[in-house]
Length: 405
Image 1 (cartoon, one colour):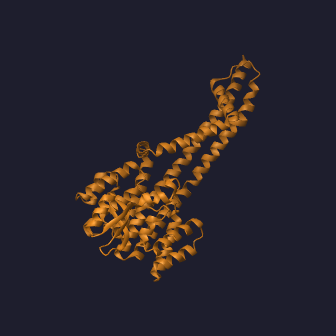
Image 2 (tube, one colour):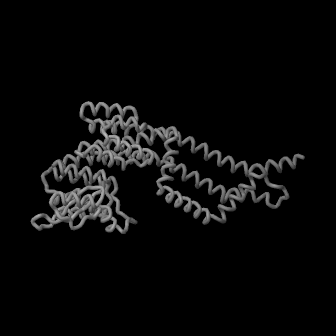
């Protein structure tokens, strides 16, 4: 279902504005008529948002760390008894970055116009995830916005913490790749030509490996601009292909077949999904809606497809644990926790517990991956350097053999 903003007339002739969910604008209009209202305007929120953000070419996105910080600040101020409008104003005033200040000010303006906080997030020209907005809406409808903000802040902070650890774990391998490429380029552009040029004036025919290395060296020396264009073109082509669901599905399917990478991706996806679903359910969002929204955090298309299938199965009456088993990718512990949660009526708590466990597992698997990646890169780098050295030494060996004869 999509969210629509409407303007309608009441039986008394007064204008009423609000939001409604439905499969189409026509369905929303019919729902308004059933409530005794006369619909004047019904606009899809996403379409309205696109009009404010330059046709979707550039939508300002709030960083995860900034979103966690402002959510925590807003919770603290509301918990202290400050009204929502004053809390938003205070958060905007103490924001350090122009982007965050603009985002909070846009929310403040919408709330002062009479919109709810969730509606303000929907209408904001800044990109905010659907699960964040749905959780806020559930908190407002239940009258427990402060508690929901606290849960959201915890979830976002945990996600940011995991992202930071993964990024820090990748610093050393990234530096090794950069240094390896720099060394290879230096050897090909400066060392190989100078050493092998000694044999240019000789009638001796160079070995095929050396000839090939000279061709590559000449290309790096004189066609480096073209080389950069090729690399840039391949990068752009990859990005274009990844926008096509079919190509992205193929790429994701390949990644999910790689032994240790598969484990890392499954654990990371399961942890992110479980935390999102747990927060949504604990905030009062309906199970089917929460499942549909939580599917958006699944970045791997084969897994997202399975979660969307789970939505239909649960809607038809199947238990969540059975739908998860049919998906055939959730770890065993997660399945057992959900089974226990359904038996005790604490699915949300068990999902959050499972998320915490697998977030720790993700860190452990990531450390193992990095530990395996380092020696692998050293072997590859050693192989490349050995090939270059052989290309230089082979003509010398041939010349020594000729002198010996």
